[in-house]
Image (cartoon, rainbow, N blue to C red; front, side, top):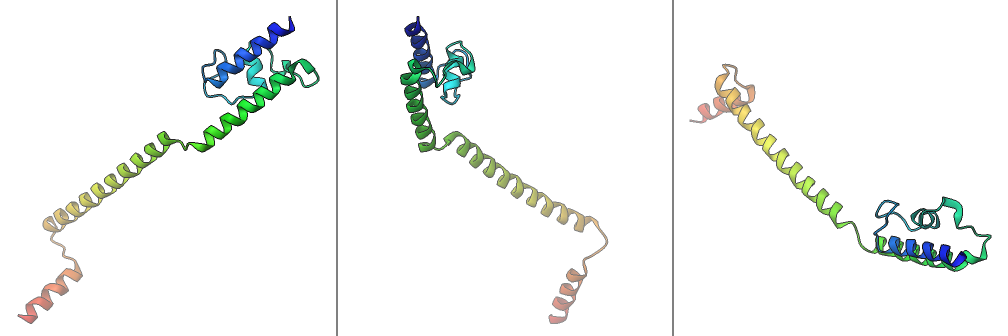
Length: 130
């Protein structure tokens, strides 16, 4: 019976390694507790004081180390592309808003009977030079 139980745990570990679990969410970390849950058992069912689980714990630790190495080796390209796209969209939005502000300032100055003091001084200095 013990070998059947260990076989269930090893099959669950293999599903976690392949990232095709049946019970735990895909992409879950490979831990002893997740192997137990994936095998349909309780969290603490793989206990350190039971020698029959020594080999399974070693396999689980090796798989967890491999998963950690793979996750740290490849940066999250999807997130990088997402943030880059969001950055470019925000720049485009800022440029559009700046041009809208400029157009509205021109429209306001054309419709307004109030002139800017700096503009009036420039006109007076240009007229005096002629």
